[in-house]
Length: 117
Image (cartoon, rainbow, N blue to C red; front, side, top):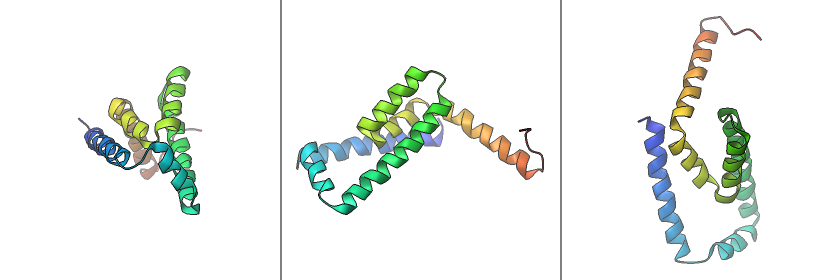
């Protein structure tokens, strides 16, 4: 099992635990209202969603099916990094193929040869 798969699974479990912990204090709606009441809260949400858009672009590159890509994009918009971690756990094999391809490309460039454009 690739290290990023089990690390993401542990992080996913931690995130579920933090959801339960936070829900014991306030509802999601109350928490969001408090968050957007402050400028840094808004900046945090902008940062989160820009990162999710970048990850959605990576999902687009990895997936061959537009419906699958749309499914994950919707999950990312609704669940944030919970969906990011879930994607990494579920699709670790596909991510590993991308990492190998990038490593080969980097090695080719380091050796002085580059793929044709």
